[in-house]
Amino acid sequence: MRALRVEVNRAFEVARSASLIGATLEAKLLLHVEEPRLAAALAAWAPTDGNGVDELRFLFIASQVRRQG
Image 1 (tube, rainbow, N blue to C red):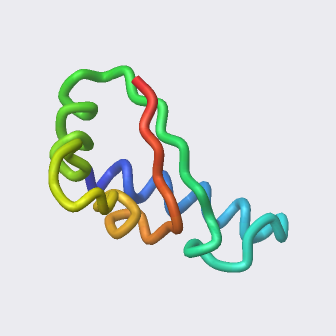
Image 2 (image 1 turned 90 degrees about the vertical axis):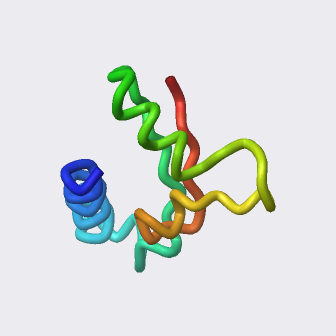
């Protein structure tokens, strides 16, 4: 999860440098995950039950996170 967060932060920096976002809280992140263990770890952060708050946005410090795969 830490390695993924590092990669996401790099992508945010590229977007910030290109003036696509001003801050990561303005970003909507779409994660495409094929590796089963990583998908399971991400699912644990954003369970389908509960209060409906997507915890992944707190992990990646983004306004919204969607998972594919």
